[in-house]
Length: 423
Image 1 (tube, rainbow, N blue to C red):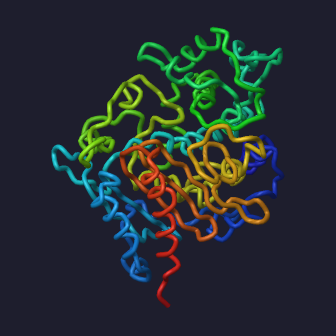
Image 2: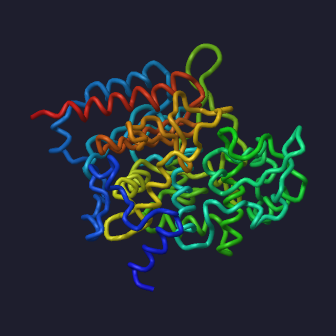
Image 3: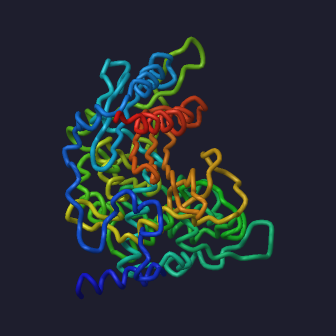
């Protein structure tokens, strides 16, 4: 099959026209991949372009991050900004390991938690492009125990789809991830199958409410294992991590990487400062455990490679990782105007496939898309400005001061710095 035939098949599978790409959206201004061929390779070294950075004033951003550490809002902070394939800012502050006085570095490995979702959604779309699954397949097609699932408190039955699993409208009850957490001797598919055979119930009809969780993504990970015949980790490694050269990204850091993993801290209840957060197998990523929607660890550079691919419409240097249509599918609203029952995001304007839409233009196109995690990592793209941003810390995102810093204040300071270009 030729590359043109493959692309046509991809677009047909996604339900979009052959000419539908990013041309009608603000993404066109970012230099997304064009039909004529790949763009120049992204800067794999991801070092700061001093000349480009000198055109902007990052004083306020630097003071914000250092001040947050000094005032003990966070134990550490690091940030990377990229604009038009140039890294403008990459700095780290505070301590990755307070007890042993190990400073936060720009290559420190942090637990992404739910900031994993964007990356694993890209993996999902590779399976869609190849025709292995469809976004509108009911999960019961692959897991018979999840067919015609009773809705709690009613006589109704529901059949959540893969799209609903990723748009947080699936209606699976909370706690699935903990109940079926796969052990080293059990595949993700087998553990989810055990859950499916245990007479589960939905909390509502699928597609009628939005409730943020990992449950739907856990189910979909099991489906991918079934249709590919591979462990989910191996699938994601081959489809996303290897093509993007994300060598420091994994569910379970090994060898030298372990020495670069930041510890996770919670504020002390009395007296200020931080204390280590309680750990368990789920949080530590014990070998054999695969948290589809929240288990990856990564670095600023690795995650920036992923975001660069998204900005370029699925292209990474000479490699096409996703079709432009897949990128657009991930970043467009999939949830619709349903009631929001639970969400970690304030004032979100929609939800794509694993990502929150925080700003949209008058046509409904995504302007600011964010994926945040419970330990303080926040990845984002400002499509209007063509600006990639990454904020890393390792403390509870549920604390208002941390949420504000990660998703609001640092984003605003980064935008202001970009807009401060000296002429």
